[in-house]
Image (tube, rainbow, N blue to C red; front, side, top):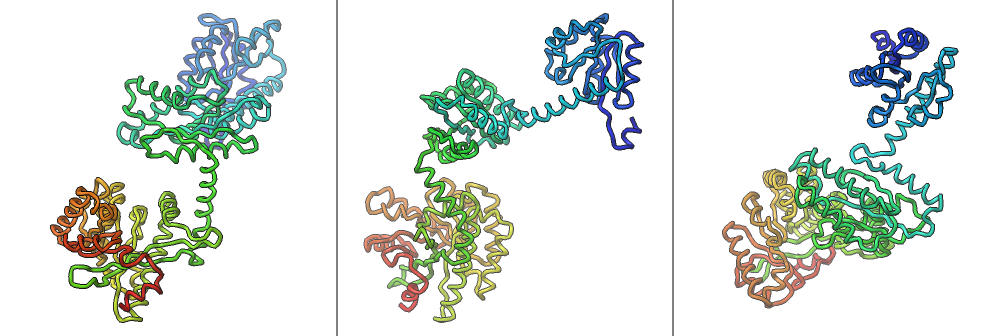
Length: 562
C-alpha cells in the first residue's frame, strides 16, 4: 500500500470470490502484480468485503458453486443494488454451456476453469475494467447527480439524435423552460437540504408527467428545468398539475411558485441551445409577475431580444463615441418671489448611429438588469461634473446638477472613491453634485444602502430621495438614512388637481419634508395651476415642462443667462 502511494500509483482493486483456496491463490498470483487483490470464500463474504472496503472495487471475479451463498444468489443481490451493480462481474466456471445463462443473469464475461494463460486473463480483466470505467464516465456526464434527470449537455445531444433519427419529423415539438420563483429564499429559510428535496421532487413530477408523452427533460442549472416535449394543449393545466403535486407533498416549503416559458413551433434549423434560450427568455419575461405564470416566445419577443442584444453590444462604443447625450432639466425655487434657477437634473438620451434616438425607458431598465448601468452612470457623472465646472468658469456661478445613483452602483466597492475622484478632477465641491437614490435600492439591501449613503454624506455629497412615495419602503428609508431633499414622484403632481387623495398625499409629503427640515422637490409640473397649488402648499422646488423639457447643455445656458 505504502509502496504504491510512494510511486504515485493506486492499483485498481479486484475481488476474487471462490470457496476453493487453491483457486483463489492461483488466480490472485496471476493478477497481484497489476491489481490490488482481495478475497472472499462465498457470496456473503463478498458482500461484507465490498461493504467494508475503503477503496473502490473495480472488478469481481466470481465462482458460481459455493456454500452459504452461491454465485447465482450473489448475482441476484447484485442486480437489486444499484451501487453494487456498478461493479462488473466475470464469472469463473468450468461449464462452458452456461455462458448464455451467466451473461443473461448479469455477468459481463466468463473465464473457463481450469485457468489458461495468465496474460489472456489479465487482458480480459483490463478490457472489462476499462470499458466499465469509460461507461461510468459517460454516465456521469449524462445524468444530473441530484435529480437523476439528464445533464444539459447530454440533453442537447439527445435532442440532436432524436432529430437526426427522423423520429419527430411529423410531430410538433415544444421547448419548455420551468423555473422556481425566488428559489434562493427556500435555501436561505429552510436550508439547502430542503432546497435539494424540492428540486428532486419537481424532477420526479416532471418525469412522471412526460412518461407517456414524447419527451425528455433535464436540469439546466440551479432551479431551472428544460423539457422537450410534443405540444401540450393546455400548458396551464400542465403547470397546475406540477404545482398540485408539490402542494400535496406536505413536508415541502409552502407556497412554491413556478413559472414557465414556452417556445412553440420550433424551427428544426435552430440548435437545441437556441430553442431553449428562447424558452428561457419567455420564462424570464414574467419573472416577478404574480398574475401570469406562463410566457410564450414569439416573433415580437425575438425582435426585442435582438434589439436588446444590439444595445448591450453597442454600449462601450457608444460611451467611447459620446453617443449618449446628457440633457439638463432646470429646477426652480418658487417660495421667494419669482422662480429662481437653483440646480438641474442630468437626464441621458442615446443618439444611436443606426437606430436613431433611443428613449431611456428602453435602455436603462435593460442595463440595470445586467449590471451595465454602472458604466453608463459613471459616464453621466463625469459629463455632469464637467458641465458644472464649465458653467462656473464661463458664468462665474455654480449650478449644481443631480445625477442618478442606481441600486447596482450601491454594490460597487469603489463608488465613493469614484465619485470623489470625479468632482476632484473638475475642481468641484462634493456638494455641487447631488446624488439621487431611489427607494428600490433600499428595498434590495437596506443595510448596504445606509452604509454607502453615510459614507457619501461624510464626504460632503448631498442625497436626494427620488420618486418618494411610490413604494412601501419610503418611510422606512427616512428613519434609517439621512437625506438632504425629498423628490416627490410626478404621479402625485399629475393627479393632485384631479382627485382629493393625490392632493392629500402631496400635502402629506410636504409636511414630512418640513418635519425633516429638508426641501421638497416636485417633478412633472406642466401647468400654472399646478405651480400655484404647490407654492401655496409650501413646496420648495419644482421642475417640469412648465419651465422646460430636458435640453442640451448649450440650450441650458439660456436659463443661466436669465
